Image (cartoon, rainbow, N blue to C red; front, side):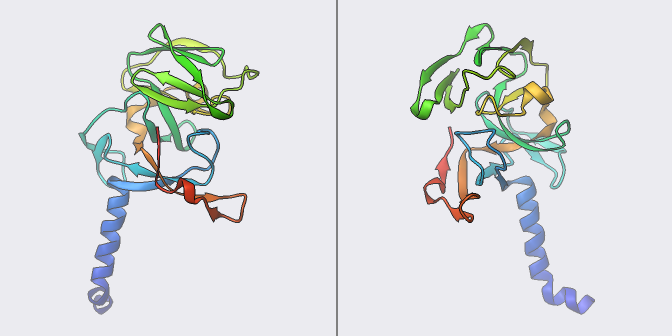
Amino acid sequence: MKHFWMENRSLFLFLALMFCFRSAIADWNDVPSGSMKPTLIEGDRIGLNKMAYDLRVPFTHISLYKIADPARGDIAVFDSKVADKRLVKRVIGVPGDTVAMQDNRLYINGTAITYTAATNGDWLEHLPGKHHIVRLDPNAKTYANFGPVTVPANQYLMLGDNRDNSADSRVIGFVPRSEFVGRSRSVVMSLDYEDYFLPRAERFFHGLE
Protein backbone atom coordinates (compact mmCIF):
# COMPACT_ATOMS: atom_id res chain seq x y z
CA MET A 1 0.00 0.00 0.00
CA LYS A 2 2.83 2.36 0.86
CA HIS A 3 4.50 1.58 -2.46
CA PHE A 4 1.24 2.32 -4.32
CA TRP A 5 0.89 5.67 -2.50
CA MET A 6 4.48 6.69 -3.27
CA GLU A 7 4.06 5.88 -6.96
CA ASN A 8 0.81 7.84 -7.27
CA ARG A 9 1.20 10.62 -4.73
CA SER A 10 1.45 13.32 -7.42
CA LEU A 11 -1.87 12.20 -8.89
CA PHE A 12 -3.52 12.11 -5.46
CA LEU A 13 -2.16 15.55 -4.61
CA PHE A 14 -3.43 16.94 -7.92
CA LEU A 15 -6.89 15.45 -7.35
CA ALA A 16 -7.05 16.78 -3.79
CA LEU A 17 -6.09 20.29 -4.91
CA MET A 18 -8.53 20.18 -7.82
CA PHE A 19 -11.44 19.16 -5.59
CA CYS A 20 -10.54 21.85 -3.04
CA PHE A 21 -10.36 24.42 -5.84
CA ARG A 22 -13.76 23.44 -7.18
CA SER A 23 -15.26 23.41 -3.71
CA ALA A 24 -13.97 26.75 -2.44
CA ILE A 25 -12.78 28.89 -5.37
CA ALA A 26 -14.44 28.24 -8.73
CA ASP A 27 -16.62 25.63 -10.39
CA TRP A 28 -19.41 25.26 -12.91
CA ASN A 29 -23.07 24.59 -12.31
CA ASP A 30 -25.64 22.90 -14.54
CA VAL A 31 -28.90 24.66 -15.38
CA PRO A 32 -31.52 21.88 -15.25
CA SER A 33 -34.70 23.92 -15.71
CA GLY A 34 -36.14 26.93 -17.53
CA SER A 35 -36.77 29.04 -14.42
CA MET A 36 -34.17 31.61 -15.51
CA LYS A 37 -35.24 31.92 -19.15
CA PRO A 38 -34.40 33.76 -21.29
CA THR A 39 -31.14 34.55 -19.42
CA LEU A 40 -30.31 30.89 -18.87
CA ILE A 41 -31.70 27.86 -20.67
CA GLU A 42 -31.74 24.14 -20.00
CA GLY A 43 -28.35 22.62 -20.78
CA ASP A 44 -26.29 25.71 -19.94
CA ARG A 45 -23.29 25.22 -17.70
CA ILE A 46 -22.51 28.45 -15.92
CA GLY A 47 -19.22 29.53 -14.42
CA LEU A 48 -19.47 29.85 -10.65
CA ASN A 49 -17.26 32.21 -8.66
CA LYS A 50 -17.33 30.66 -5.19
CA MET A 51 -15.21 33.47 -3.74
CA ALA A 52 -17.61 36.20 -4.82
CA TYR A 53 -19.14 36.38 -1.35
CA ASP A 54 -17.02 34.32 1.04
CA LEU A 55 -13.77 32.49 1.53
CA ARG A 56 -15.03 29.17 2.84
CA VAL A 57 -13.63 25.99 4.32
CA PRO A 58 -13.60 23.54 1.37
CA PHE A 59 -16.60 21.18 1.18
CA THR A 60 -18.55 23.22 3.75
CA HIS A 61 -20.60 26.41 4.11
CA ILE A 62 -18.32 27.64 6.90
CA SER A 63 -17.15 31.15 6.07
CA LEU A 64 -13.59 32.06 7.00
CA TYR A 65 -13.83 35.58 5.64
CA LYS A 66 -16.72 37.56 4.14
CA ILE A 67 -15.63 39.15 0.87
CA ALA A 68 -18.91 40.81 -0.14
CA ASP A 69 -22.65 40.48 0.26
CA PRO A 70 -24.93 39.43 -2.59
CA ALA A 71 -26.02 42.51 -4.53
CA ARG A 72 -29.35 43.26 -6.15
CA GLY A 73 -29.29 41.91 -9.71
CA ASP A 74 -26.69 39.19 -9.09
CA ILE A 75 -27.29 35.77 -10.60
CA ALA A 76 -26.54 33.64 -7.55
CA VAL A 77 -26.36 29.94 -6.75
CA PHE A 78 -27.48 28.72 -3.34
CA ASP A 79 -28.13 25.44 -1.55
CA SER A 80 -31.75 25.73 -0.45
CA LYS A 81 -32.64 23.75 2.65
CA VAL A 82 -36.33 24.38 2.00
CA ALA A 83 -36.23 23.10 -1.59
CA ASP A 84 -33.58 20.50 -0.66
CA LYS A 85 -31.53 21.24 -3.77
CA ARG A 86 -29.19 23.74 -5.37
CA LEU A 87 -30.94 26.61 -7.15
CA VAL A 88 -29.97 29.42 -9.52
CA LYS A 89 -31.96 32.66 -9.15
CA ARG A 90 -31.52 36.42 -9.27
CA VAL A 91 -31.12 38.60 -6.19
CA ILE A 92 -34.05 41.03 -6.10
CA GLY A 93 -34.35 42.11 -2.47
CA VAL A 94 -31.44 42.65 -0.08
CA PRO A 95 -31.73 43.00 3.72
CA GLY A 96 -33.92 45.96 4.65
CA ASP A 97 -35.63 46.26 1.26
CA THR A 98 -39.41 46.38 1.04
CA VAL A 99 -40.50 44.47 -2.07
CA ALA A 100 -43.91 44.01 -3.66
CA MET A 101 -45.22 42.65 -6.95
CA GLN A 102 -48.44 43.69 -8.65
CA ASP A 103 -49.43 42.07 -11.95
CA ASN A 104 -45.84 40.85 -12.38
CA ARG A 105 -44.40 44.35 -11.90
CA LEU A 106 -41.94 44.88 -9.07
CA TYR A 107 -41.94 47.68 -6.51
CA ILE A 108 -38.77 48.12 -4.43
CA ASN A 109 -38.82 50.46 -1.45
CA GLY A 110 -41.99 52.07 -2.74
CA THR A 111 -40.62 52.78 -6.22
CA ALA A 112 -42.16 51.10 -9.26
CA ILE A 113 -39.57 49.31 -11.39
CA THR A 114 -39.86 50.28 -15.05
CA TYR A 115 -40.10 47.80 -17.93
CA THR A 116 -39.47 48.27 -21.63
CA ALA A 117 -40.37 45.85 -24.41
CA ALA A 118 -37.58 43.62 -25.69
CA THR A 119 -37.43 40.97 -28.40
CA ASN A 120 -39.66 37.88 -28.59
CA GLY A 121 -42.22 39.36 -26.24
CA ASP A 122 -39.77 39.54 -23.31
CA TRP A 123 -39.20 42.63 -21.18
CA LEU A 124 -36.19 44.59 -19.99
CA GLU A 125 -36.48 45.03 -16.23
CA HIS A 126 -34.73 48.14 -14.94
CA LEU A 127 -33.60 47.30 -11.43
CA PRO A 128 -31.65 50.12 -9.72
CA GLY A 129 -28.21 49.96 -11.32
CA LYS A 130 -28.97 46.73 -13.18
CA HIS A 131 -30.95 45.99 -16.35
CA HIS A 132 -31.80 42.48 -17.49
CA ILE A 133 -34.35 40.56 -19.56
CA VAL A 134 -37.29 38.82 -17.90
CA ARG A 135 -40.09 36.65 -19.26
CA LEU A 136 -43.59 37.67 -18.17
CA ASP A 137 -46.93 36.06 -18.95
CA PRO A 138 -49.69 38.71 -18.82
CA ASN A 139 -52.29 35.97 -18.30
CA ALA A 140 -50.55 34.27 -15.37
CA LYS A 141 -51.94 34.97 -11.92
CA THR A 142 -50.48 32.37 -9.54
CA TYR A 143 -47.23 34.19 -8.71
CA ALA A 144 -48.00 37.61 -10.20
CA ASN A 145 -48.77 39.37 -6.90
CA PHE A 146 -47.26 39.48 -3.43
CA GLY A 147 -46.34 41.80 -0.59
CA PRO A 148 -45.22 44.28 0.30
CA VAL A 149 -42.71 42.32 2.37
CA THR A 150 -39.58 43.54 4.15
CA VAL A 151 -36.46 41.42 3.70
CA PRO A 152 -35.04 40.43 7.12
CA ALA A 153 -31.41 40.85 8.16
CA ASN A 154 -29.06 38.26 6.65
CA GLN A 155 -31.70 37.08 4.18
CA TYR A 156 -32.48 37.74 0.51
CA LEU A 157 -35.46 37.71 -1.80
CA MET A 158 -34.68 35.68 -4.93
CA LEU A 159 -36.69 35.47 -8.16
CA GLY A 160 -36.26 33.59 -11.42
CA ASP A 161 -36.17 35.61 -14.64
CA ASN A 162 -38.90 33.35 -16.03
CA ARG A 163 -41.29 34.90 -13.55
CA ASP A 164 -44.32 32.67 -14.03
CA ASN A 165 -42.36 29.41 -14.10
CA SER A 166 -39.98 29.67 -11.17
CA ALA A 167 -40.14 28.17 -7.66
CA ASP A 168 -38.30 31.03 -5.99
CA SER A 169 -38.83 33.14 -2.85
CA ARG A 170 -42.53 33.22 -3.63
CA VAL A 171 -42.48 29.47 -2.86
CA ILE A 172 -39.46 28.82 -0.62
CA GLY A 173 -39.39 32.13 1.24
CA PHE A 174 -36.36 34.32 1.93
CA VAL A 175 -32.93 32.79 1.38
CA PRO A 176 -30.44 32.93 4.28
CA ARG A 177 -27.05 34.51 3.58
CA SER A 178 -25.37 31.30 4.76
CA GLU A 179 -26.89 29.25 1.91
CA PHE A 180 -25.19 31.19 -0.90
CA VAL A 181 -22.58 29.26 -2.85
CA GLY A 182 -21.41 31.86 -5.35
CA ARG A 183 -22.18 34.19 -8.25
CA SER A 184 -22.26 33.61 -12.00
CA ARG A 185 -21.48 36.09 -14.75
CA SER A 186 -21.07 33.81 -17.77
CA VAL A 187 -22.15 30.63 -19.48
CA VAL A 188 -19.12 28.37 -19.93
CA MET A 189 -20.74 25.93 -22.35
CA SER A 190 -24.17 24.72 -23.37
CA LEU A 191 -25.60 21.42 -24.61
CA ASP A 192 -28.95 21.04 -26.36
CA TYR A 193 -30.83 18.36 -24.42
CA GLU A 194 -33.45 18.11 -27.17
CA ASP A 195 -30.96 17.63 -30.02
CA TYR A 196 -28.73 14.73 -28.95
CA PHE A 197 -26.80 16.93 -26.50
CA LEU A 198 -25.15 18.78 -29.35
CA PRO A 199 -23.21 21.87 -28.25
CA ARG A 200 -24.74 25.31 -28.68
CA ALA A 201 -21.60 27.08 -29.88
CA GLU A 202 -23.23 30.53 -29.76
CA ARG A 203 -23.66 30.23 -25.98
CA PHE A 204 -20.06 29.23 -25.16
CA PHE A 205 -18.53 31.92 -22.91
CA HIS A 206 -21.71 33.97 -23.21
CA GLY A 207 -21.76 36.87 -20.74
CA LEU A 208 -24.72 37.25 -18.38
CA GLU A 209 -26.54 40.42 -17.42
